[in-house]
Length: 409
Image 1 (cartoon, one colour):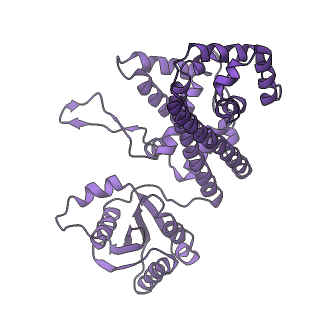
Image 2 (tube, helix red, strand yellow):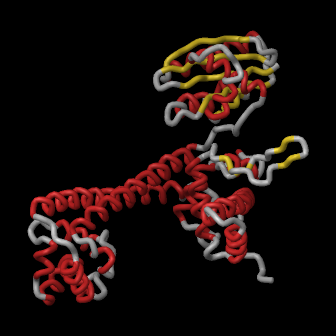
Image 3 (cartoon, helix red, strand yellow):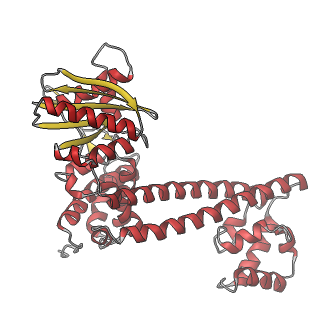
């Protein structure tokens, strides 16, 4: 006899229902999503096990952004529940939604909790969620870094759009990044506008750039000439519009500086935490996989022992192609599922796209897949190459070994 506990997680409440192997409801209730509520669920489980011995106790809840983290962690780490052999599983909301549509009994939190318990009873889904705390810490850091980088990219795009209004040929002409500290200062200087700087004699502009860059420009004169040329060839704005654009540029320049500073700070913390995590060096030994991709992959996977084999990792990352058959008909083209961990999928795809530039085996595989179709060639080839990379990641992490390039035939 097994006990299946479904927990419907909300921001402020937890609805829970337990079914046994015979689909009999053993208990059902609703509580708050806080420490007291989690303790209530624990005590209810312990009380039930005093009346009935269970071979296995499985608790399942949907992945609900941040709201399921605390109850999941509490139930997974509680010593008394661990002594009972409680397993906590996170269920894909897509799966539970389609399962609940099989029933015609409406939708409430209590009904959803019962459906989750019933789904666990039919087939325990997913992998045990318990991770060591260092993996949890690393995952929080890498995910926030991911979002900071996306914000930085977005800010840079807005900056470039407004820079085009201000000086539409500058980013194409200047032989240095417009996002460097010196160029950001030059473009947003309140005391000396870009037009005023370009109007200076070449020698004075060179000296001005030298002071701003502390002599870090390799060829300051070339940069100065490019700035003058860009300003001369760009469209002119009226003063009112130019002032508005300058204000926007200053806002985004400050945001870019702030985000760069935050990313550097979080990178430092990631380096400290990742020094305690095994497996990262195994992945960085692969040509093309740097620290960012390696740490991101390991942080999302957690302990590699959670996955029976590489196919489970691929499905967890949303890099799986499900078979489609009907009678004697077998569909040859099936789309890959995206119902997985989007962060892990991102790191694997980006890492694969980098690896294929260094490794001839992956380059040939990528090129083969690229040539198979007329449309969406790169996207398809990159995803398929990422699926191939999953096998290598699984072997390296499970065997704790460094990558060795295969002998050249």
